Image (cartoon, rainbow, N blue to C red; front, side, top):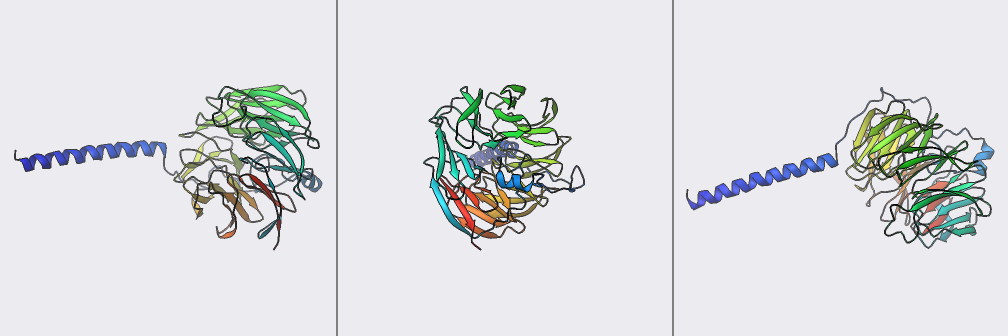
Length: 415
């Protein structure tokens, strides 16, 4: 064989080997980033009631306008009757000195928020001054939740938070909302989930691979549910069932009173996002880059939408639409029935935190520290703010409260 033929043969062999490596690489990528599965609005899809419909009397909404992460027990992130729209005037701003990874709750005329370095702050909602604060010297990466005249805040491992101690103790502390006095605490593993109170039960997950239901009167666990890995996502509740996810790649539905398993379903990677329950479905993002829709009663996979990047963002729902951000730097409005894209928005930065829908406007932030307000029906940009990094916006009837990177803002509609 001539030298030229040898060269041609070697080049051909290299091309074949390269193609094989590329194909193998693509298969690995495809397994880690699976594609879209289109759904149908005729299968396990309930449209008789919109999410966010409040059964709380008006005086209760005035007293406790934003009681928990995601606004309600279903984590819909849509507050009906809150008529606050951009443009906004910054009424006040308060520096926190540390990262605000999760949004505040609003109750009793105050905004309550935990900072990453372990301080818990109660801020006057109208004026922006600090009413009281406590320093727990433990990392905080979750929103509090409001019970009957009690506020519950999860605590992680001791500060500093650069290298987390996986087997450290964690707590949920119960505080007097007027004074910050600690009423009691429950010890578990590290607690990163934003908790939920339904009746007399406090629900939260832990890095010790369990979901807890703690009686707020006896301060004892009524039940625990073991999973295959850490529970970082918060739970959602609807009609007697608790929905949550774990780093074992699974979503669980359990009886909220007993902890008995009703169903479990799998993704192909970790679930960090808190589930959202609406339209007879459970919507949740996964680090495989997809948003999933499971049947609320059956656990059947109804659709999965590929976004091109990790989905840490929890979803908001409104008018049969699922709103969610992706690390692909795009924000999506997905048809709740099929998973089809209604519109998407190039945000110019990775999106990690959850959106909020208020008065027809959907708000979200990017890791580039920009907050956007888009028309929820069309995706048209209505407003932009130069702060915010994770889950930015909560509200009451008068104001929007925006969690910036290290600052908290009170914004009043000026239009």
